[in-house]
Length: 262
Image 1 (tube, one colour):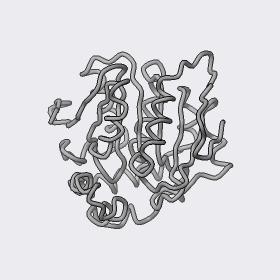
Image 2 (tube, rainbow, N blue to C red; image 1 turned 135 degrees about the vertical axis):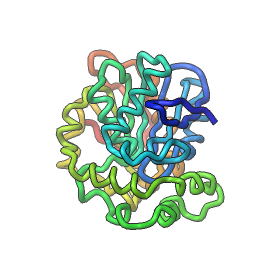
Image 3 (cartoon, rainbow, N blue to C red; image 1 turned 60 degrees about the vertical axis):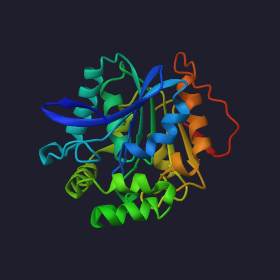
Image 4 (cartoon, rainbow, N blue to C red; image 1 turned 30 degrees about the vertical axis):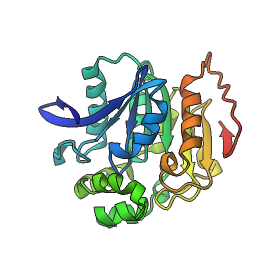
């Protein structure tokens, strides 16, 4: 277990690999742990860090820090503490929101942005996320698969207050304005069978940052990085290793998913 102290409170993270730093951020349900397969797949190209946000996993539970602003500050403090000058961010659900806020405010630091299950609009969020217990949410989304048992056990460590507070705050966010402020190369991924975050409409996709790409993993639910791991890892690795000049976005892959270019 690796940890640092930010503002006198413990922040847990794990790291593997060598190369350009990539930071993985988890969703409202989960922790750093479900990123392990993606981190392993990308470890030959990148130095991959996965964090537990305030109130999740093994990071400190301090209700005063259960705000979107303070979660972004956690990421900023971590980057500063590690002495990183430029990073790529991969965020899922809540982590995608945090990553997008950071990228919008720090385009010079953020080289690439990948979001998974980013909720475009309040109606995109299943009300069960707000009302169910942490254990029920973890079972709902991870299932009873023994392969995901360790991720389930880590997920149920989360503070229910943290989940509710952060969801309630996001419901008040102007997500369209947030996306319009985001100026870094980015890809946006949704699972076609995600029970927690619904697919965005064509009208909503119009707000994606210029030059970005949207992918639907039709056979995946809330965790495309686990449910279609090989496709996810290939897509993200290719995106992070692309040379992008003057806003060009020459991502060329054999498409086993639906792609939409913005």
